[in-house]
Image 1 (cartoon, rainbow, N blue to C red):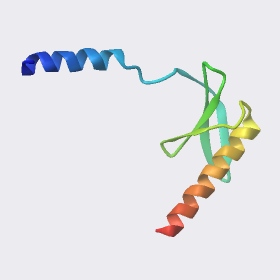
Image 2: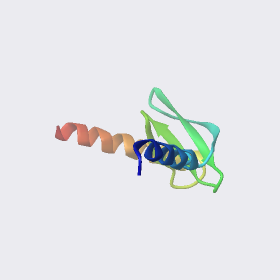
Image 3: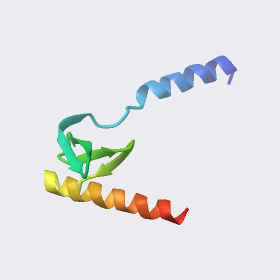
Length: 83
């Protein structure tokens, strides 16, 4: 395949790839002094955004998201302690 053809094929493939399901903001979760946005997906699941990471909520409600974020933050803290 010619280089130009390979570039066109790559662009066409990239155009077909989506960024994932659309998320709708449903609120936020506050842990200590920080607040993290919570989004609902079309399939009914919720997720939180924590420092750039996506944290899936155990159930689609605020309490479950709070605990999911808390556990994520604790796990990150423990990993940071390891070095």
